[in-house]
Image (cartoon, rainbow, N blue to C red):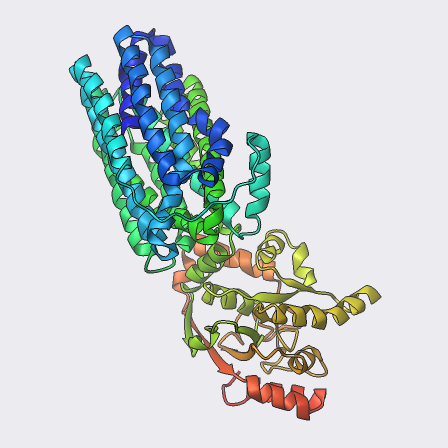
Amino acid sequence: MNDNVLKILTSFVAVGWAEAEYKPMLVSMAAGALVLPYLLFSPLASRLPALYSKQKTLRWAKFAELGIMGVAILAFMQQSPWLAIFSVLLMGFQSALYSPSKYALIRDIGGAEGVANGMGYMEGVSFLAMLLGTIAASFMADCDNSLVWYATLMGLAILGYVFSLTLRVSETRQENRSSANPIVFIRETHNMLKNYAGVNPVIHFLSLFWWLCASIQMLLIIFCEEEPLSLSHTSTGILLAVMAIGITIGCILGGKIDSRRFMMGATPLLGIGISIVLILTFAFGTNIYALTALLVILSVTSGIFKIPLDAYIQKKVPAERQGTTLAYFNLISFVYIFIASASNYLILHYLSSRYVFLFLGGIFLVASIIFIFSCREVTCWVGYFFMRWHYNIKIEKRELLQCREGENLLIWPKHQAVMDPIMLFGSFYKEKYRPLVDEEYFGIPVIGHVLSLFDEIPVPDLKKSRKGVEQAMQLGIIIEEALREKTNVLFYPSGHITTDGRETIGNRQLAYNTTNVLPEHTRVVLMHIDGLWGSSWSRYGKRATPSIVKLLLLSLIQIMTLTIFLRKRRSVSFTLEDITEEAKKNAREMTRVEFNHWLEDKFNGGLGI
């Protein structure tokens, strides 16, 4: 709250003491002053939770705020815009140092299961404080009573210190071996987070939220003063407050929803929605009623968008590395905020202020599309979301995919069409498997990148070279090692899509050999997939396997033109069957050919084609 009172008061009042031509630059500097310390001191901040109690770090930071407010009061007494911006810089330094400790305490208080709700309420309260700070600073700027300014700034600092004394938390000890050099810190932490799939893309995607907030807050101060709006400081403050209320509501809703269902997958769709609202604001934002309505929609959507990403970081990274991760996230997010200040300044210098909305809309649209293909869970969920538009998917005995402690799965699906791997991973987006994939797919742009998200095992083309045969002989060893490490493995026993609607395994040996070395803790689950034979994705009526690239592009066109809704929904079923004991017994007693015939009968018998 005090950050925003000081920043907004500096933007409205202290900047007014300078000449008009310097106003846009000073507004950007006031915002940037709160950001720059995060860029320089986040590596240092990441060390504090490892060296000192997080609660003590919080208390010392709030105590230091008393002195910083003394500097701010002196700046307003002297009517010095530069000293006022310096006080904002000091507040940024103070906030940067205790931010990792503050956020790491959320998991200490509520545990991993309470992260989504904790982040939702924490961010909701933060934006409520931004709201109150923005409203207070707006009214204070218009009433022009310096004693009120001084009392508010110092009073909030005192309250912050008093509240910090009430913390009583059992803390998780933090690890930190990071460099204090910001460039080295970014490189080291980025490499460390590669061990936690999806965290790096999530941090960058979430940082766009802060870019948006910083840009809109700076923009409205100038945009609302211009014609045809010509709003007062108080009216502009109310608009900023409306946004803060919307984000507060969105954050709380996001925490509630994410604690009950998987919301991460929806974040790129929310991002695309945000980009559409921003483009509409560019087109219709000069009308006060349209602007207000669009800002409400934008802020609530942004709040919901934020929390699943926040919670994902805290759930994915171990508690002992939270301090380093959160400091890294602070640094990256404030790099984005710094870019927001620079981009706003450039756009305001060369174009009308409303073009900032258009620029932000374009950024969010591109980033949302990229993010869909950057995180395994998100890729699967979005695929499932769009598949449900055209397919009526029914899953029977899904509980067979639930592993008990110390258990893992070997999954054998039926292969009716080139669509069924996409449908499989989309329908089971919550589960994680390591699939075998034909190496030819890795050379296809986008598809090859998406496959890399699944920790796949490449299957060589035996027809191309002797090297392929040697690699194929190693597949059994790779699969056995993965199963012994309790990794879930998935492969098609037939190795190809059906040419006549029936599953044909022939003389292939991978299923038979794997069953003979199956670890005791591994269950074998057969997955019948029915309903895709006869579709455009199958070989029904075709001489060759259909091109997955052409079919995906056609599907994309149908989605974008909405013609997909004009087509009848195709019914597809997944039926799971646990065949562990039967498979082990038959592998011991049968030859490979006999075992394959038995497996073909399991796939083809009684369930249609």
